[in-house]
Image (cartoon, rainbow, N blue to C red; front, side, top):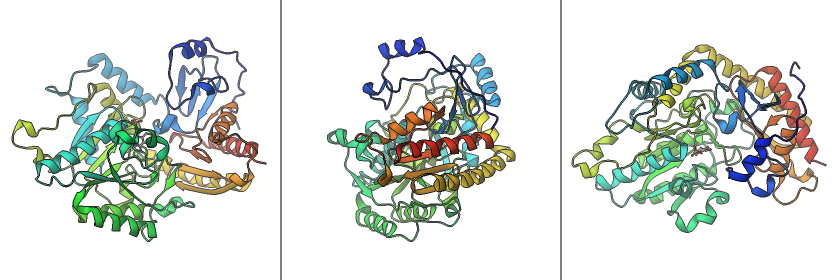
Amino acid sequence: MTLPPQPVSARHPLIDRDARVLWHPATHFSDLDALPPIPIDRAEGAWLVTPDQRRYLDAIASWWTSVHGHCHPAIVDAVSRQVAALDHVMFAGFTHEPAVALAEALLERAPAGFGKVFFSDCGSASIEVALKLSFQARQQRNEPKRTRFAALHNSYHGETLGALAVCGHDAYRSLFSPLLMDVLYLPSPGLEHHDHRDLAAQAGADEDATRLAIAQLEAHADELTAVILEPLVQCAGRMTMTGSGYYRAIAHAAQRLGIHVIADEIAVGFGRTGKLFASDWAGVSPDLLCLSKGLSGGVLPLACTLIRAGFEEDFAGSPSRSFLHSHTFTGNPVACRAGLASLALFDDPATFAQIDQLVENLERWRHVVAESAPIRAHRQAGTIVAFDVDTTRLRAIPGDRLGFALRKAALERHVLLRPLHDTVYWMPPLCLKPDELERLAHVTIEIIREVSA
Ligand SMILES: Cc1ncc(COP(=O)(O)O)c(C=O)c1O
């Protein structure tokens, strides 16, 4: 391996300044001593670099955002030129080339049938937009009984209250449940040993959970406005792979029953599963499609909701029927330029050749890890790889601290992993090189062995 040795460093002053004034997401104050935030002042490709030149391999693309790798020169250049010309303008009453061009480019490449794009600034906001559009359309098309949403058990759609309500994951929602709307939760298959090739084979179509979910949709069709789901992989839900066949079956059943399909591709869009959109594997054209994270190449906060052509007809007529939803930074030109530069990279056939190669390399190393460490199950969809640690072989680790212990062990080896309890996963930038993957695999083996007896 050609990777450089890491210098040892003293505690950086930024850590204490940070501790005095900041509240970090998904972080408990009591963990800050054992695992203080790591100062980063530079990033490049798959690497994050500290002020004292220590380098961390970003094996989860910084919460699944950095699809092409950090500071890709084409995106940096596009953003720099745009910010010097037009930094921002409010998007009500104004328009600009980057937003129009990005909307056109998305509609050209997305599954068939979309006609409009509604920009927002984070994944949760794009979900709120989809939920509200679906609900308001029903109210205005004389279907006032269709007020309820269906979602999947174990799903994650964000943490604003509407998005949280459709999360089928108790860890996020149970404390807030008195504040949340009543949602119908559907079962889905958890294909524990899912292989990348199962995406083309329409896995998950012929499962009890699939039949049960369709029966629930049929039983509740009159009250449902939409079903929301993460196609193929429930990422925050321990990288549970539900199958392209399941997605296709549920989407087709819902659309047959007049229920809108909201696809949340916030985590799985933009090449992650080996195609530009995860819906492409199932041949599904959802009614509403939510995108964020990789939309700007992971460089700036940007999100959008794609809307089926003709949906706007239910909003025509009196101004009181308009969609009253706005975010201050909607359609920010700099973020849209990043999105255009990122999409241009996906238009280069070399990018998908690189993704295909990465998928193959990940598969090879996935098997090496599974044979070398106590793993109960492992699976893959495109560039998403997950390992379930064999918890019968664990050393004593207090309470629910396994994910924390694994993360700490990986960071001590200069690799950023953020296991979800007993599931260690890889979701690297698409530019990950073979020697970087080899290092990632060895560190994964080491940390799982370290927590196992
Ligand atoms: C599938 C999915 N939906 C929605 C969200 C929420 O996005 P954001 O954190 O940008 O609000 C996430 C974030 O991880 C996600 O993975």
